[in-house]
Structure formats: C-alpha cells, structure tokens
Length: 296
Image 1 (cartoon, rainbow, N blue to C red):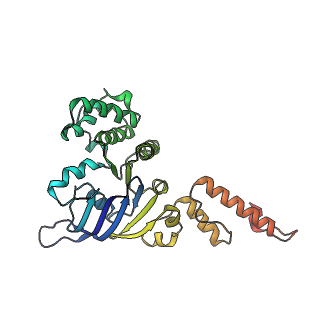
Image 2: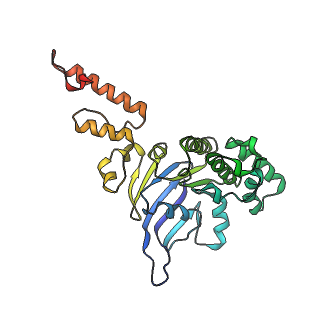
Image 3: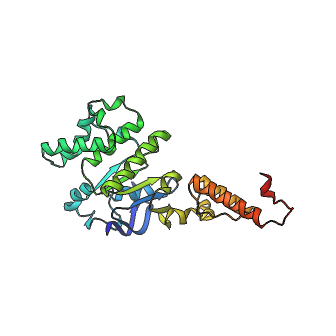
C-alpha cells in the first residue's frame, strides 16, 4: 500500500525575474507503507528538495504529490499531510525550540491540538523510544549532537506520524551519533511500522534500506534494492558517486581476475566472498603451481 506518491513532479525555486530553473523534473515514484527508502545523490541532485515535497514544506511547480492519498497542494489537506509525515533536518539546533527536553518534545503535539493528558504519555513514550527518557529535564544545549538529534526525532515521534523523512539528519554527527540515530529509526520501522525515507550521502546508511533511489540533475537515475544498485559501480562513478568501500574492493579484484560477487556489501560478506574465491582459485590451480593470489 502506498504511503507516498509523486506523479510528474516538477519544482523550480522562484527567481526574481522570469522562471526559476527546474530542480525536479517530472519525477514519478511511490514509497510503500512500512518500508525504508534511502535517497542518494550528490549536492544539487534534487534529493533534499524532493524530501521537502513529502511534508508540504515545498509544493509542486508541476505534477502532484500524495501523502496517504492526500494531495499536498490542497491547502485544506496540509495539516493531515503534516500529521502523517514528520521531518528531521540536518541541524538539530534548528528544530529545538524549548529550554527543557520534555517541553521541546511536547511542542509539536501541542500545536496539533493533542489533549494535555495524551501529550504527557506521548512525550514519555517518544523519549523512551529514542533512549532519552533519563534526559527529560535536561537543557538541550547540554546534550551532544547525537543526543540532540534523537530529541529532534522524539519530537517527531510524539506527533505519531506514519512516515518520518530524515533530510541528511546524520550529516553533522560523529560516527557514534550516526549509529545511534540509525538504530533509532530502524527500531521505529521494525517495532511500529513507521515508513522511513532517508536523504543521505553516506553509503553505509543506504545499505540498510529496503530500496535505494539515486538522484541526478533533478531526475531519478537509478532505483532498486541496494545490493542491485551498488553493483552498478561504473554508472555511479559516472555521476560522481562511489559504491561502498567493500564493493569498490570487490570490483577492483574482479578486474584483476578474481571471481568475486559485487553483491557482498557488508564487511563480513565481503571477507567471506574473497576467502571463498581464493579457495576456489587454489582448488582449481594445477598441482605444483601457485596462483598469484596464494602469495597473499
């Protein structure tokens, strides 16, 4: 069942004179309810502009965007759109509006008109969901970047959205902060069935998605499962992107003649594939002759 859908979606940022240049060009795609979708692309590819269409932060210049069947261009439907899709942006400081963590998490549901008693429950549940229940009375400015981003996610969770869009939400975090945020959103997807859309430029984040969409010059360039897309090393390289380090290593070994699959994305899979290929080389080598791979 569709959570998000675009049909011939185009968008241009306005210019002072004349028409703006198209940033999105007749994009048609759907995002299934309960899935994790990563959208990858270099700067200027249109990926963040596309993300903002899903929450009616931006509205189409042409075509349509539907959120759970609601037309985002319909002003009367925009509150329902924003109830269903929560946005988490790159800099958590831009989303934190209160001086106490629990008050910040309560801000969005208060503005949605949620009853006071229910807000208390939602805030407690949201903080527990991101592992920040012990920080409810803290001042946000005392928290680390990863903790602040988890508070931003808690504020979105308290809205009880059906979909969360993370617009490069881990870009400013250290590796541990990134891992914490990713584990949080994966758990929300797994335990609550929340649809996740991740706008990212980190290959390891894209690896964990059910589906990967690669944007280039405002268009969908590649679309499929990460294992499938990351095997298309030359196509990614052609638009200034690279495959994960594991796939790049396997690609180099293939070009040197070692029969390894490019579908081994994780470090464990990559190591296993190389070991298996080396054993096969050794087994098939004539007795008394070493292959060059045996020298390693």
